[in-house]
Length: 387
Image (tube, helix red, strand yellow):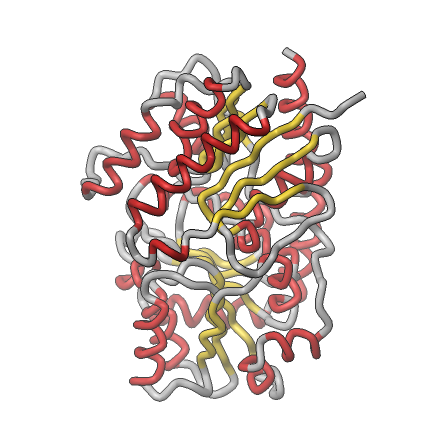
């Protein structure tokens, strides 16, 4: 029997998007999958699904033109291949995905990577308010709505007055994702070779490089710690260049290594060379308070105990499984957290390292992509396709 086709779209480079990769690989077990994404220029390929990349280089920094061009290309591509399901990821593609699905009479799935609902204290700037209204247009029109954790699903159901709860598919990393030897890591990321040539304790922050997430505070922390510690900063974002300037201004080049963007398939191989993972988010805004962080799963896949800020979802996980230390509870800003509290958290993990490592194994057994979320996703998409 000929497999039905699902078109998965994401306004992102799939090379770096672990959630979309996991989704496509899971659904490829029963369906023909085509991923429509931004072209990274790295010729990403996956034997389990097809990738149709769209180059946006000609638009440089004209962001609105990038979106419009991508949207038009997506609609035309949908008309060309006529899939059974259009699966749109994140708020950038909500209404365009719905329009594409309607044009070819396909089912529509909307995966909300972010929680773009504002609380009563939050004021959205124009751009964020636009995306909020953009999502609101179609959230009740989906054949299947997906949220990244249970807390977000409950908020969306209540706020949008949905008839049923969105399907929860968590940001859980896959196991056994080590793809590089240590020497291969050093060859691909040469600035790490010097870092790992010593026996210092490696603290790692991986994620969006935005100073609002308290990265400058982490840098200040490392500056206060003795020479036995080093910090790796993995990722990219609007403040990456500014972060490099902060490191250089404080003469911390030997203690802090800005690694930059890392391919998703290389992430665990690098993290396994580290000792402690840090997860920080701003302490205000619903999207941050109920964050659906894949970082905590990435760190645990690599066997790293974690230090996290006091988001509701992070606190639940860390304290339930005793896989690290939560800091900053009772504060409304990362920069208000006492430096001593952060330092004590690092020391506590060092003293109880084997205890946390053992608990990580239990956490991974109960939070397994292959045995839990992957099966739920495949089951629900199959049901939708057959209805």
